[in-house]
Image (cartoon, rainbow, N blue to C red; front, side, top):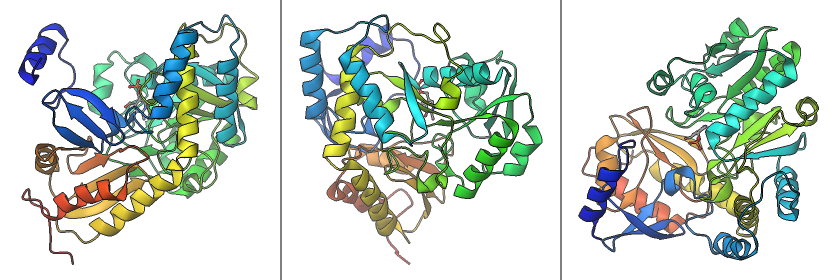
Length: 397
Ligand SMILES: Cc1ncc(COP(=O)(O)O)c(C=O)c1O
């Protein structure tokens, strides 16, 4: 089928949900995808922040092929040597206090379970989240989401959710009390426009949670699995070394195979008993094969240091470019803040076969490339931005 036929068929038989780019992806490798028309695109949006190891990393592909020959699936009703090894491996790269994993299928499900674990562990109900937050589209997660456009989709929202200002500890203090089960936050608010908070904020949050017996949850659906140049934001210098009680994960965890997880500390896991949590597909063998190969690929290909290199290179090469106000974010989660709306630049880049992301802030373009992105690939973007006809470019200082 050519693109027009594919688009017609999909628009006819699939509910209209996302605003799609006018391309049909047929195959991918590393930072590149090829379309139905044989065109090659540089994917600096990493398949929607999912393909951290790059598209179809050979290690992941081979692991999936091998596993598919053995057994596709069995649930948590049985033991599995693969699931055991994946849980051990994931815990081994996590901050030391996070000692157990719970596997599920997506980011929203990881957050639903993180909040449930917090309520079970504290016997309390209230959850505090932040202005600009996005935690997913199922009932509890969308109710913890304070990006209005999304939160409103979840109406009627689940009760016992309250909002504090991101990065403002006094605002958190004004809503946190001894009825609060959890404080949940994205340590870098990606969808809101790659908004960051100081390490000091995370330290103060940790102390406040300790004082009031509140469970601290980092939603690392985007920042986790190497994205910031650290295995996790939790415990890194970016967080001032702070380790939350729970980290939720998804997106890049399975390199494209749907899988989510919660990593929890001993204090919290002691409160969980049989039948408190569950999901049929969580921890299935295909997903587990993808996770193990993903973690090994990140390690073997030294992708954490590569993600940091990408950030530094971009900061250097875009500093002083006319029309760009700031570079935000860490590693391979970058927000480029333009002086004006980034829409025209985003469209122009797509015309030039470079895929980037937008955000809820019209001026902020998001980059979430594979952690294996090269300097040559980064250069393709910067060359366009420096020579853009869409209002940015040249005149470096
Ligand atoms: C920070 C964050 N949390 C949760 C989610 C929800 O993940 P999923 O779409 O896998 O349910 C997303 C998705 O974009 C996200 O960015």
